[in-house]
Image (cartoon, rainbow, N blue to C red; front, side):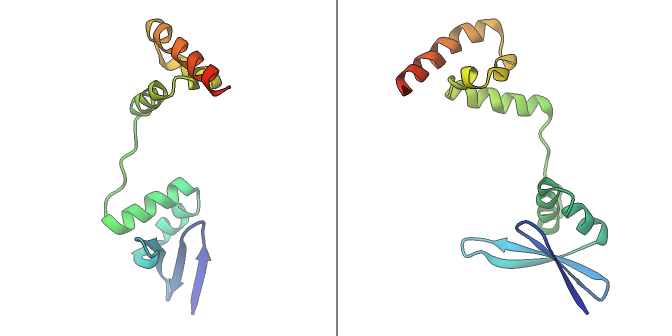
Length: 117
C-alpha cells in the first residue's frame, strides 16, 4: 500500500516501509524522486528550512552549509550598503554598523528616501 504525505513544494511517498521524497526540479518542473529515511521524512515536515535541507541532502548526499551569525550579518551589511535607505526604514539594521559607517551611510539613505517621494 502506498501513502503520500504532502508538504509545501514536496511530497513524501511511503511504500512497503520505504520512503521517497519528490519535488519539482529544473526548468520544466519535472518531479524527481530520492530515497530517504523515516527520520528525514519527519525532519522535512518540521519547517520549510528543514524540508529544503532534506531535499538538498537527498539529492547530493551533503547537508547544505549554514551561515554563521557573523556571515549572515555581513551578508545583510553588504545588502544595506547597496540600499542605505534600509537603515532608516528598518532602524535595527543600524546595529550592524559602526558610528563612522553610519555617518557615511545615513545621509545616503536620507537622500534616497527623499528621491523616492
